Image (cartoon, rainbow, N blue to C red; front, side, top):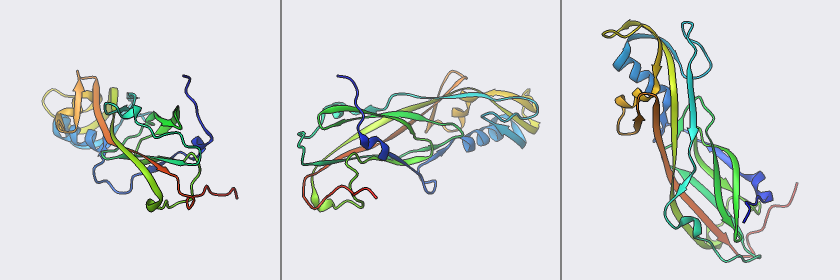
Length: 223
């Protein structure tokens, strides 16, 4: 079956995170690594585009496919035409980076596979899809069914960042390129590395699919 995209795609929204609880800030992790492993008196550093001391960073970001827990993609409600659906993705450990992090979110809507494209999860804590354009806030008392399942998304960053410090440790240079994978050494609980070149971070969360069939929930009228 080919992927389908309904009009509700236009209502898909990513909500940026307010505050920093549970969030990993990639630039802060790199900064802490530089001060711990490279040198003191940090002058500047850059992961993307902006050169430092004549050196240009070469880091690229990659977002792997969103993976639902076993059996989750097969859970669906009966395709009742009189019912409306609402989809939520709660991100528990988001990340803030200088990169765009696009991911395809896939759901089963009214018995068909729907792909939602170009969702940027950078600095995001919540995403939702409202295919029938229901009025907000939703009345939880009118909800007939709800399915929850966990998901994960692997992020990887590959290449070299650039830096400049006033004083370097051991035989390290005071300025130049450095492999980003090594940043995991300073935070092994949250980060992992694949060799020196690749840094890995896993985002996790819960996907909720709600179905409303009561007549009290009506789609919003076009303005």
